[in-house]
Amino acid sequence: MSEPETDAEGTDEAVSSPTPGSNIAGASGPESGALIEEPIIQSEDVNVFYGDEQALQAIMMDIPEKQVTALIGPSGCGKSTFLRCINRMNDLITSARVEGDLRFAGKNVYDDDVDPVALRRKIGMVFQQPNPFPKSIYDNVAYGLRVQGQEVTDEIVENALRGAALWDEVKDQLGESGLELSGGQQQRLCIARAIAPDPEVVLMDEPASALDPVATSKVEDLISDLAEEYTVVIVTHNMQQAARISDKTGVFLTGGELVEFDDTQKIFENPEHQRVEDYITGKFG
Ligand code: ADP
Image 1 (cartoon, helix red, strand yellow):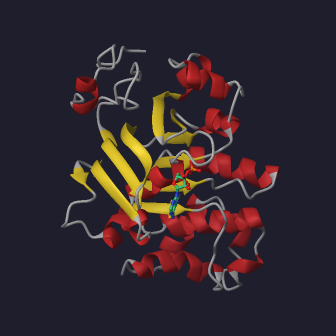
Image 2 (spheres, protein in one colour; image 1 turned 30 degrees about the vertical axis):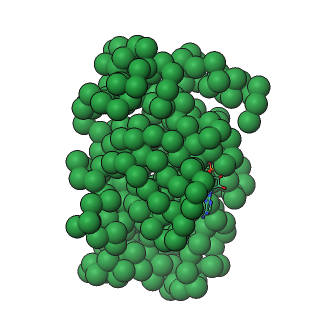
């Protein structure tokens, strides 16, 4: 693995002036991480507050295209908050305030001229609880397109269901309610809804934590397949899951700090930070 082009001492200068394409992780301490040449998402000094409470501290992260990036760490350390920054879902929380630069394809998503609805067409999202609408399977998938004012065709719906590894199971019941499906099928339906508008990035907030082991395994296989076409960023509290399915891993620890971000194998086998090792080996969290 190539050495990172970051200041080995992790000085403030390295934090505030990252080299383009670097992926400095954390606001202090030694830096680590493989150089990502053309990140699709770049977080530079992102701070998030809920009212007076700071939830994220100077997050620096470069997310590579068409790979799976996992965000792990104990509950309450800001993983979901960071995920929601990427497609501006935090706009919906009145007390939330985001500072810093969060770029998607080179453009700061918080610029005044960015339309959050258009942004979410490019950056779809799947939540922890499968949340299909009380509509037919077909209309659930079509919904994602209609919201974006996009054309709905049978072919697009079929392709989205195929992309979500659900087509074979539902092709003869497209008119039936999405709520009739099992939990795992419902989650794959939500994934189909998210990918129907053909986004570039799919954000997933603990997408398998409400599922049984068989359904979890199907969703994990699907996530790996999705990365052939999309950039996937997934929050998971399940470290084994992160180790199984992700290419890169970011470890958030208490206080909303991204302590380390690197190749998943490196994080799990030889992390730079003792706190990360303690977390990975189950000493806390
Ligand atoms: P994680 O995903 O790691 O469990 P979160 O991003 O959900 O962490 O939460 C980070 C911090 O922000 C926590 O202290 C949490 O209480 C706070 N927080 C999250 N959502 C809100 C909200 N809507 N309003 C106020 N505080 C919030």
